[in-house]
Image 1 (tube, helix red, strand yellow):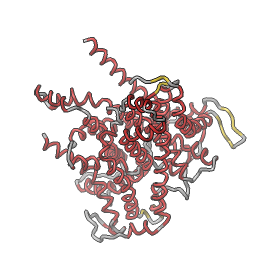
Image 2 (image 1 turned 120 degrees about the vertical axis):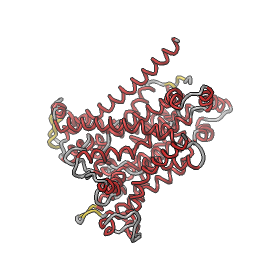
Image 3 (image 1 turned 90 degrees about the horizontal axis):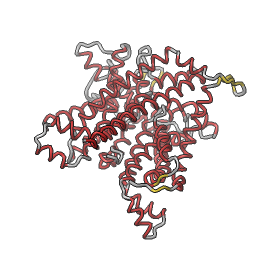
Image 4 (image 1 turned 180 degrees about the vertical axis):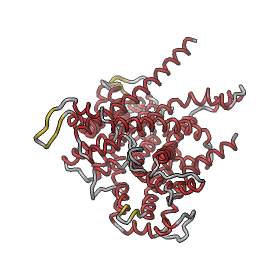
Length: 295
Length: 266
């Protein structure tokens, strides 16, 4: 769409600007301020430069939780994106079953995050939980509170349960936007269902998948509440992710300087990965358009 | 093919519903029964767990608090996001692209990062432990998303409609409220759905910014863990009650969900 140049439009965005400035810029500046000072009390603060950053970056606890975090986000994306696409392809398209499956799928998304943790706690415990009970009766020794592999599997399963619906619903709405004529043409060409998926559906899903992967990356990278409720980060530190390490540092130990430096690094990592992903995808897109125009 | 699809979607739905069924099952059992042994259906059906919640103000006030700040958040979000989304969809202005991207980066900020500064900021302006503080804090996530969604829906409305309205002598305010908003009503529904969703489910900030008067239900739930162990029955009942508002909201927007999740830009 051709837009009109008009700087008066700033008046329309001013409320948003002020609101976000109040709730984002001021806090962020506070964090930056803390991250370069050593604060003893209100009147005694010393400028320490990048010392906190160096300390934080060489802290093995943080390196560990960063590695865990990347592994977690990666696994989550690898499972949820293909599964979500499959579920979207299987969803009925009309009638009451369509509404019903929409409601069922959207359900996990609207449950408060700590309740999600609670649900899985009740569901997976080996003494009172259905899942834990069934697995143990199958002869597999399963206890997510004492075995770190089990804890990981449970947290992953919980995340899949919680968030695959988001990808599925995004893809579902993407699929609904494909005109029937495309499918008719494919039927005339006797295209296999794989070919229909690969050459009609998948390209049309690209837009929503970018949004989906970005949202899933960001949210899984910031995950706090669900594992906190389910495993409390344990056993040991095996399911302690970045947010939990940070919260422990800032509120538990009140190490404001290092916590602030860590916050900035954390935020930058999320920004950087999101930006890299976004530009790669849009560049691929541009190359494709170029190729097609050369043909 | 269709048979396989049906089996697939039914088994996935079962996977989604199974943990929820277990939670509901638990909420109608007494604690002795829960810890005593496994049963697929409450043997000794009881409403006692729900009774605990409905008769204790410190319990049910938690629900009112949560609903209060969630509604407040949705209203604030809509009021500021509507004009901004209109500006982004219709006009070019100095710094528009940067501003748009900057808004989105706020969605990428880990809440844990903002924990401490939020606490200090809202304490210093005397808003600590008020509903408005939580609503404003949640705006950090809901506003960027709302602007993004609404911009998509507004861009789908052709410009000619605006121009015709001006030629017909409508003022901007009149046109915007009477003509334009009805055209993007499904977009507004979807926006409310998303602001509701992210505000209702968030706990970390809500818990940090409140102590007594505005404490959300999700934070109150932690008190079921007492010296004598966990009160599983009440915990499950409280969990079940937090799911209900979500179901209501989905039910109302179910016809817009397909369009809405594409954020208006497929």
